[in-house]
Length: 79
Image 1 (cartoon, rainbow, N blue to C red):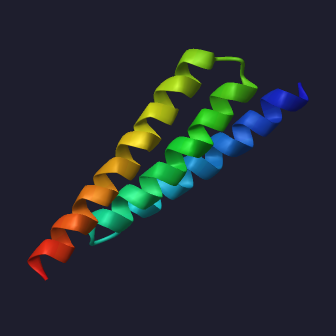
Image 2 (image 1 turned 180 degrees about the horizontal axis):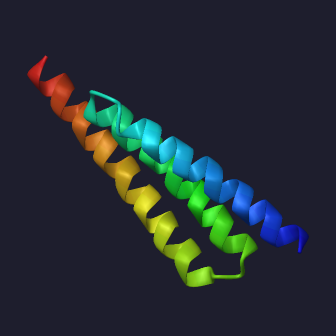
């Protein structure tokens, strides 16, 4: 029961950060907040023993981090 409550807390934090990310103007900040949200969702699924959901969210977090790096390189090339 303890793990279920901890998972719900991680889920609530992830949802809050995901909603905040939609208010950001720059793509890099949006992706950064969504990466943090994906990490928290991965922890939620880990505590619920849903390993597939955890793995998918970790892949999403890695993808977002990769896109942040690409956007920063493009901005350096333009600027």
